[in-house]
Every structure is written in C-alpha cells, then in structure tokens.
Image 1 (spheres, rainbow, N blue to C red):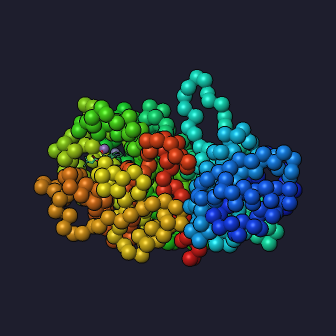
Image 2: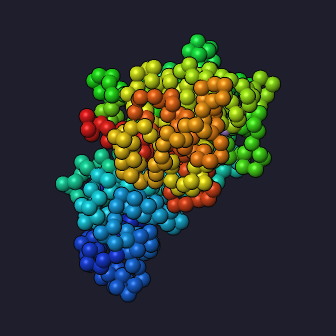
Length: 500
Ligand code: BES
Ligand code: MN
Ligand code: ZN
C-alpha cells in the first residue's frame, strides 16, 4: 500500500473513495460536509438529519456520488461524540472504514478527518492513527495453501492535510506506517509454525531486520552460551535437536552510548512443556510462544524506520522446549549465568529460565533499563483475560514510562503487585530458587522470579500470554498473532527520545 498526503479541496479530489470522518454533533460536521461542495452537502446533511447516519463510532455509510463530485464514492465513518474522540477512536474508525472500502472493491482511498478532531487529537496523531489502522486492519497471514486467497488490499491511501499542517501530517503518516508494518511483521513471526521457525530461523529474521536498518547485531550460538555459562538457557534447549540462539541488536540513536534501554523478549519457538508435557488440547497455539521475541523484533523494525534519538539493546533468547533423552528434568538443579542456582519443578516453566540468562546478559552488557516481554503464564489469562497485558516492575518511574507508552499506543496494560510475601513461594529447597511458585498468583511469582535477575536495574515485565494471540477476528487483527506490544515499545522509545 502506498501512503501519502493530499492538499486539495475535498470536492476536487479524484479517487475511488473519499472517506470522511463524522462526529455525532450535527453542527460539528458543517465544515467538512460543505467542503464536499453544494451538490453533495445538502444531500448528506439531509441524510444525517433524517437519522440515516448518526456518526456513532465505527458506523459506516458507503455512498455513490454519481458524478456530483470528483470522488466516485464517499464513505462516511462515525467517530462518536466529539468530546470523546481520541487516538484509538480514530485508529479503530479507520480500520473499520478500510474494511468497508475493500468490501466495496475500492483500491484507492483518501481519508479526511474533521479539523476539530485533528485539533483535539493533533494532526500528527490523527494521521498516524489513520495509517496505522489501515495497516493493521488489512493484515492477513499468507499461510501455506496451494491456492492463495485473492489479495484484497488497498493500493493507495492518502490523508487530507491543510497546507499549514503539512509537516505534521507527513510525519504522522510515516510513523503510522512504521508502527503498522512493525506490528504486522511481529504477527507474521508469531503465526509461523514451529517446524518452519526454529531458533536458527527466528534468529535470521532478527538479523535481517537489524541489517536492513544498519544496526549492529550479534548472534550467540550454543558454544558462546557455554562459555558465558548460560546454564538456564542451555538447560531448556538441551532437549531439542534445534540448537538455541541469542540475538543481540544495538541501535544507537544518540551521540554517546548511555541510558541504554534493554528490550528482552522470550523466543520459545515451540513449547511442548518438555518432560512436563503439555496436554494435547491447545498445544498447537504454542507456535506463538515467541511472541515476546516477535514484539522486540517488530519494535526494532519500527525504530529502524523512525530513528528516535535513544539507545536500545535488544536481547532475544531463542530455544525450543522439547522432551527427549537429553532433556532437562523435574528435580534437576541448574546454575544460571548469574550464579543463582535453580531447582526445576516443572520443565514447562521454561520461559523464565531463558529470560533469566538473557536479563543477566543484558545487565552485564551495561543496559540501564530493562523491559522484558514474554508469553509467560497461563495464569495471566485467568487474572486479566485476553485484552490486557500483565505488568510488573521494580521501579516506579520506569513502570510509569512504560504504562504511559502503552496508553499512548492504545494497548491495554495493567500492573500486578510484587509484594515480598510472594517470595517464599519460589524460594528453593536445595537451590536458591525454584522455577515454579505453584498455582496461586502464578503470574506474579513468575514475574518476580525474573525480577531476581534484574536485581537493581530498573525493570518492567510484560506478560503477554493472554494478549499475543487471539482466537477470533476483529477490526484490527485476524485470529492468531496480534503483534501486541510492538507499538508500546516503539512509543516508549519515542517518548524516551523526546525527553532527552
Ligand atoms: N508458554 C507458556 C505460557 C502460556 C500459556 C502462553 C498459555 C500462552 C498461552 C509457559 O511456558 C508455561 O507453560 N507456563 C506454565 C507455568 C507453570 C508450569 C508454572 C503455565 O502457565 O501453566
Ligand atoms: Mn511452558
Ligand atoms: Zn512457554
């Protein structure tokens, strides 16, 4: 899809379909409707007055113009009450409008957001929202069918700008496209099955993204891991024929390599549970157990395109969790890279093990802040459901930054506590720690286990087990990988750059 801006009067724009955002308050729509010219304005205003179209959020009306204006059709899309319009409402309306346009076999669209809405949301963010919504809503996973579905995609999306707002709209289009494309890249990785995406292949994808944007990248193999004494990551990997990898990407957006933010993403390319084998039902969804890794890779793609003035180090541990003659067992005691010993209660609590060594590695590399992302616990689905990412942290300021970035990005996230009283649940009997704290507060004890390795580095943990994969389709994403938290990480990078 090509994207760009257009400065013409609405009535003069030649396009398959002019998408016009409308709010519920009739008088607020006057300017934009009169911009469509007298031949249509009266007709549309009458229709709205009759109640054919109310402007309620995501309501749509596809109207052929029969030559009254240059555009062949007008698609009205509701934005709801003017007071309540925000970034997410514009994004979601755009997603719905693009779907409707495609159903009407339209390939070229021009999007106009009312000035009053642009002023409230900012021209930059409303353009970003429109383009991001368009990219997200058109995503589909190509899959492996011999006969591919017919490609249903816009060829071109232009956003209407007023001449004094041109630069802001331009920037918004660019960042909306970057956010949308980075998210869709993460979705592709999550949707790719385990046989086609072992650690070595996932690592190649990460390297490709880094190289494309001229970032420094290093891939650690099994031997490197042995030298570094990554006993936890190696224990998980040892049951698989597929060797593990750890990809380390450096993005330097500032003159000096300081204030480095570490992004650490769980990359279990398939999680059978290992010797503590998972039940048959739903195991196939564990192709998505690298959702944290995918989020980091997607975010690095966004960052590579937008180049914020911030320093990032991505650390992505990758392994396959399999049962086998060489596999690690319940009861084993392993020594992590940090030196902390861990008693294995279940080989299915593997994510925290590979992350433990990745966090230790990131700290040894000198990162100043950490965000880790992981499809870590089934328990987070019980606690927060499928729409909200679980958040835990050891630092108030840093968690505020991350939660603010999530809010800016329009991704739901909610904090869980890290009270000391939970510690005894994962204190080891014969080792320093146990890799499971039992059934109760499963997400909290898993997160706090990671916190033991973050030590005094400001750290935020995002449990995306509930949000990284969805059962059904919605306007923004089809079933499967959602690409959750790509946009939060990218927004976090941008916000940290603003403050520098
Ligand atoms: N990858 C799973 C968590 C998961 C569950 C992700 C459902 C997505 C959907 C993780 O490795 C796991 O198996 N966690 C266990 C931990 C337990 C054994 C302490 C769990 O949640 O049951
Ligand atoms: Mn597991
Ligand atoms: Zn897992």
